[in-house]
Length: 150
Image: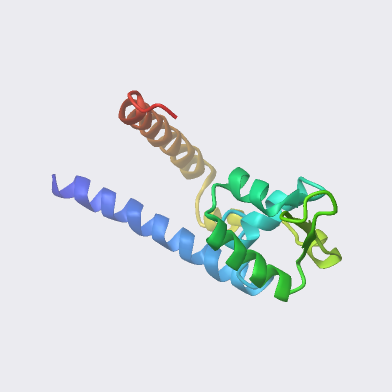
């Protein structure tokens, strides 16, 4: 059992370090705007739409109105988005990307650097092992959510 805990600990530590590396990388390259969360997630969603109401954006991203308003205020003050009243419904706010928001890059760190110290055989074994772990995780998720009604 001790080896299993060491393995689990190593996996969790690796996960923690990957998240930390992502935060540092996005912080240096995009002022902390990770396209998978927070303000970066909003910019990523807006890139797919020309313009959208604030209410629709909150619904699409499943963000509470107050939280979305705060995130949009930060994006607006940094010049990434603009908000204006709808001409057809004065109660609605339309959210649009600015030119700066349009140029927000969806780059990712170069994860290939992580594997420089591995041989081709070690990379193949790691890939196979991670695929098995992913398959097991998918089974666990399916089993845990089979009674949920999404």
